[in-house]
Length: 149
Image 1 (tube, helix red, strand yellow):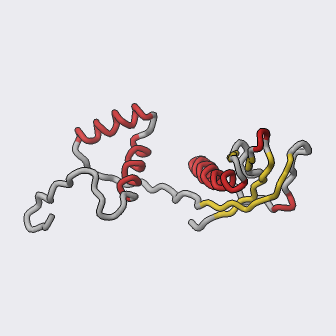
Image 2 (cartoon, one colour):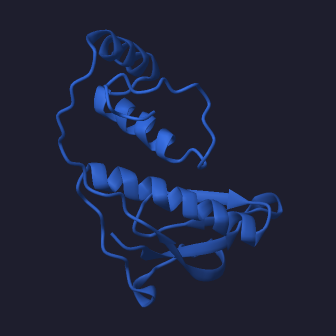
Image 3 (cartoon, helix red, strand yellow):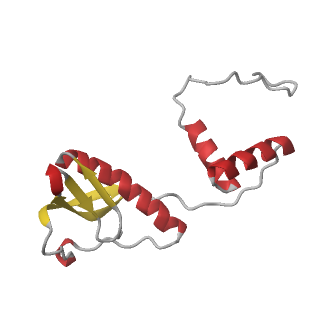
């Protein structure tokens, strides 16, 4: 899915800080010591909010800028448009893995407070984001005859 842009409110906060919040995602707030830092953190906050909304199948449509109502006490600097890519929908897959590997994965997933599916998704994502040519462990050669390692 392509990047979606949501309106955000940049306001001056206490102690010289700046805060960014999203009318479409109550509780989604980011802060920084500068406007740039707050806006950069807002992108990450929006991505997390979109992930949560996607898991609940409730991704809202962006509110129009002219429909945004800011609190009277807010020291609004400006309205921003912040973009993030909604996560891809999940798809069920069946894989065959050794039982001892599944048991180890389940134990670690439980330790981290995750489901098995979330753990495998995290592990796969991490493997796919390792820079090309960098391997953190030695990968054993294929044991099937006729295949080159």
